[in-house]
Length: 336
Ligand code: TXA
Ligand code: MG
Image (cartoon, rainbow, N blue to C red; front, side, top):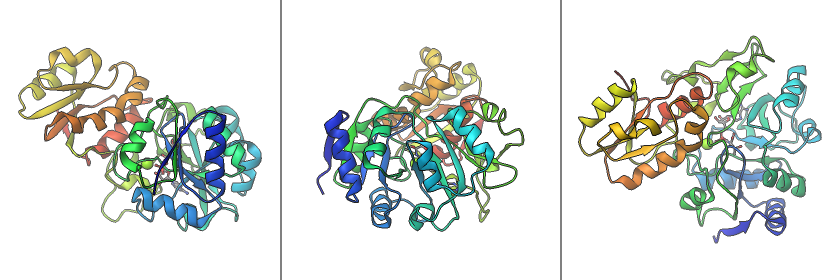
């Protein structure tokens, strides 16, 4: 299959919308990461998404909408909190799991009676949804298991020849995927941390619980609320090990290693004698989120067998960064 490269202008947006209406799969920019979109009403199109990504069959997709009318079409029995959260955070990187409507293709939710929904804060994504008139199911536009794509070049590196098109826009602003919460359980749970933090959400959901899978590996056989959380994920081919330490201890430790590289904070690079990639400032978790996946992809170009990553703080947006890194490291964490 030839993957058509589209611009993010009105012609490119119209072509993407036509391809999606015709049952195609097209990678589109969002503010978090690029998504691989298909009609949420079309089981055939959804099957193509799973095939192109090599996605595990039990992992449901997020549905992207452009307005509140569309929310009413894809969801059922919405609780009051859903409207308050939409008012506060949409368009934006918050995904809510709620009861699904019958219109959503069975294959979107993989047999669950819920649907994950978000309204992306990206003008191109919004226009593609509006123009096609379809809610779009879209997982991140990467091969399953590899780091999520924060540029069109990442999408093309993974999926060229496997999808109908890609809309080329700038680098993703946020850099990690949306915060996922479920309102389908009582109390509500945070399933995946993102730019919108647990602290911010608690103003609307005082009884919000952080799912145990956010910070640790689910036990063998444990039932997980969000199937995507149980996999090794976001990993380059190079082995990743996460190191929890202060700046001096991290530098001492990695400087004693051979044939390895380090991923560290900008201000610590000068202390490190190994090949080094920087993923933002240690004091600025949003900058870390922005650069994380791109750094993990670049690790494969360093020609080393292992990369040690200096762990972020686990609070605020740092929780999202830490959550992605423990999976990239297949839960291998060294505490110094
Ligand atoms: O920022 C994002 O959310 C990006 C962009 C493209 O919007 N999308 C994204 O999709 O990250 P994906 O498929 O890579 O991650 C979806 C996550 C998975 O962890 C999945 O298990 C969870 O959402 N999920 C989807 N539907 C669910 C449901 N009904 N119940 C519980 N978890 C669900
Ligand atoms: Mg993903």
